[in-house]
Length: 232
Image (tube, rainbow, N blue to C red; front, top):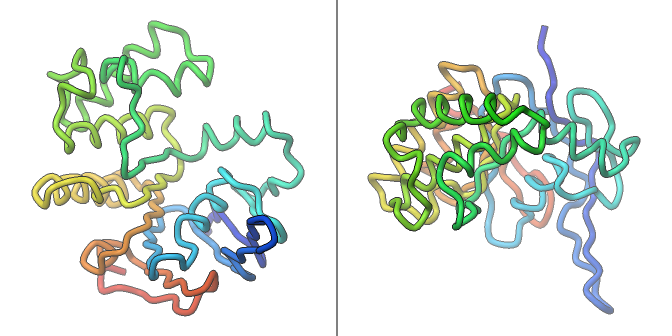
């Protein structure tokens, strides 16, 4: 039986910019099922990142409903929402968002600390995940001592720390050279194919979008095309 992990129901997101209202999303409805690999594509200003942020409950919609594992976020207070989001979704950003003063191990341990995992358990799990992404020999290195590709691997390890159902990636190869970018895409592909992780990725590059099973095309805050790829 298909399990829906994220769902948008007639979602609008409107930003008030002084006297001007910006309609970033206009009536978007979308279901993301367990094991899906979906790319969100569209021109600049089409609402890609806003849709990603609303689906992953980093932003609340102006109108409409977002459901995480069938639970409407409108019925959750901020603390409950943060707890549910923290267990369900792992985030990977273009700019890595690592804490510079922390080692790779400490960065990966951070979400486990937020989830209340005991220190010994945090360190053991973070170490194993770093080994899994090929950084077992870099656990004591800080971000400034790592290449861009290695920093993105740390970010992916951090996203995996709480064993989330969904990996949300916003332009995950945007700051990488082509070789490092290909390695990161291979890692994301394997997380979906071999481990069954649901992947939701924003990209502006067609070649990257085609790694997904389905491409959601946005224009002016609306879904204009829902395209299956050859990988489906």
